[in-house]
Length: 321
Image (tube, rainbow, N blue to C red; front, side):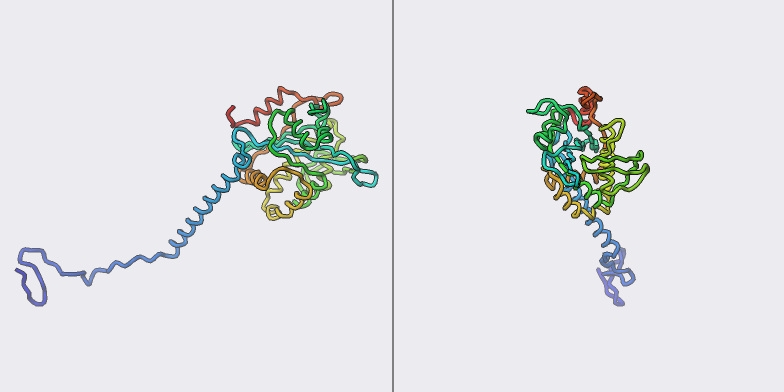
């Protein structure tokens, strides 16, 4: 039986005893408040997750394989630098435009490399519809389209896009980048009256503006002739690429794009350009410079087909055959 006594309620003798309800001496548990630091952590985690998601989506959308629709080989881009003949007053003369620079950029996302293959302009090539001639004659006969077909036959790889720039645009782009740093290997003095330009450079590491950079790649008084020129072209193009993806010049992207629109002809879309730029920035892609294998003859740079095939195999590194 329960009993009442002295205001206490208890149980029968022998049963457990204890108060009814919470003890006034025990702390009451309260809801924990979300602290400032916990909130900051949650917000930071959410932002990080968003950034990672966007990075993955952008990387997938701009991947060369997705952008160019090529998955079983590298993306191949033909790069042309064109020149004109100038009169005694420095004005361009009417007539066919020559291709003074011919390069093949092979973008390999499997190994994060870009193979930059320079093709000497005196290379002997079969030009469709025009027989055998120097490879740069293909541009005189049929512009970039015929040059594209000629280089495809010469190297043995398909070309996906082309970029053609004139030298005036090259000068403006280098100036817009703030110049390029080059280690000039020797004193260079040369005057080309037919081409309307002169070169006057001192040996040593220096920052070249657009006009001096153009002189550096067009200097022709070398014992190895065009082979030395293509090596300088490779050196300069690497320097321009490094400068273009610097933080400072990423802020000048609109200005540089305006110059490109004025002086560059290409079939690359904006997505194509963004894809290559993102690939270079994201992977810090290694640029491997090569010259089309061959040997000198009295009139031509004669291609060595066996060594060209070996070079192509190297460019296909990472892709199953």
